[in-house]
Structure formats: C-alpha cells, structure tokens
Image (tube, rainbow, N blue to C red; front, side):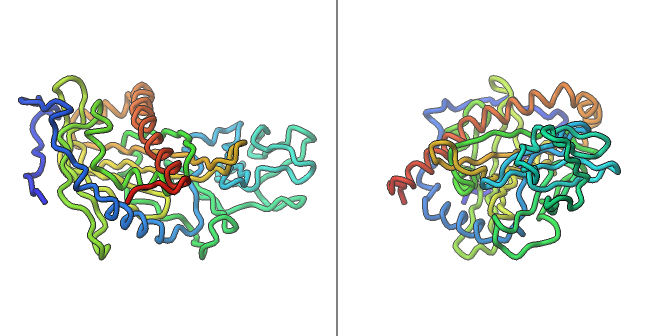
Length: 336
C-alpha cells in the first residue's frame, strides 16, 4: 500500500488545504474495503476474550445521590458509590417486590429503594447479590458471567491510554437498533471515513490493513480532521479491536499523538418490537504536549459539550451504517 510520509508536526496545529479535492472527485475506496477483509478482522475481534465485562457508562455518571443504571442483554444493572466512595453494584431489581432500583436515591453511600425503603450498601442482603464492577477512571464496567458465558477475569481489558488526569476527556453514549458486531464492523471499515463523513474527515488513505494471519491486526490510516472550510489537522492513526465489543483509534503521529478514542458496544436487549438494541459508549482521551494544552484542559467544562456534539454527529451516521448492516443480515442479503 501507499507509504506516504508521516504527518509532520509543525509550529501550529492547523493546516490549510492548498488544493482541496471535491467530495465526488476523491479517490474511490470500495475496491480496498473488501468485504472479506472486514469480515476477517471482525471474526478475529469477536473471538477475543472479554472476561464477561461490559461498559455501563461514564465514571462521572455515577453521582453522589443517584445511581447509574442500564440493562445488559436484558439484565437490569445498577451501580453507585458506597460510603467510602468505592464503586459497588448489582441487579437493578429490588429483591423485595421488584422495584426498579434505577429510580432509587443514594443516601450516604446506601441505595434506598423508593418503594418500601429496603437499603443496600453493596453487600449481599435479602437475596440481593452484588456483581463484580470496575471503575477505570473514565468508564465503569460490570461483569455478567451469565450473559457473557466466557471464563471470567478479575478485571476488564482496558486499552492503553494517556493519563486521564493529564488529558481532556469526554464520553458520549447513543443507542442503535443493531447488535454489537455491527458497531464493531463499522469501526473496522476505515475506508468509509472521508466518503460518509466529509464534514469531519478528508484526505483519508489506509496505509495498511490486516492480512488473513491476524499477526498484526491494525488498520493504519493517514487522515485530516476537518475543522472548518480548508482548515484541517492531519494525523496518522491506527485502529485495533482488543476485544469483541471494543475498537480503539489511537493517534500515533501528528497533532495529539497518544490521544485515544475508544468505542465500546454493549447489548441492551430487544425493544418492544423484538429488535436488538446496542448502546455505544465512546470515550475520548485527548492529549498534547503543546504549551497551550493545559489551558484547554481548564476549559474542559465548556469543551466537553462540543466534543460530545461532534461524536454524536459522527455516530448518527455510523449507527445508520450499523443498523443497515444488521437489517441486511437479518434478511439474508448482506453482500460479500
């Protein structure tokens, strides 16, 4: 494949595209995006162990007075922080008469059922049994052995990240009518980026893709992030799938080298029409050695809504991709 020079890091992070190529005139990528290649990468990703760990959401979503709750493949789960600030959690159904613990408040580290006052401190009580949970500093996870049915592990496989304390972090969540494999397949097709998301990506070239051996299962991409008009930020990035429900994009050269975008897919269970639903949790950990980056970190409360809006715009399209893939699979019409 084309071995273009690495994106150069100049004095300023932005670049002006001298001769922008119209969307319809860019080089087609459909020949390179071979269905068998994407399917092979997906198959290897789905075969990797997860230890039965599932992402629930952002660590900041566990508030002092309210739990964080969701379903995982139809299983209601609730997590909160006990009196010592530790993450605890378990089934989201009250063992007394089935109240939804998602709607119950936390008082001094104790989850108090709002139907009859049954109090849970995170230890076994009245038939309620805690579940293994994990707080990695950005996301919270739960282990559900009955759902995953794999050999369990004591902790999830958390991708290598920049130090969250020195990064600008943001977490976005959205739901699609699809299965986790459809979300992962979308992320293992980097060729669609500049065609499907021209408002965000331009000048995309896939420098390397995995072969059938799986010895080096990375996609390496040169791409420019579009800011506005002709202003772009060129980078080199790699995509990997460390587990069956996670794809990681890591900037390896150019502006923000070391920054990470994690996309985690968690099955919710069927909707009222019997269709599968999957929630995507995307965690961005941006880092830079630019002198002005500490200022950007101090502006994080103002920047995070913009980061989430950008992620939401991309995932509006990517979930449509995933939903289309799931629909074609269901009808036996998926190509390749």
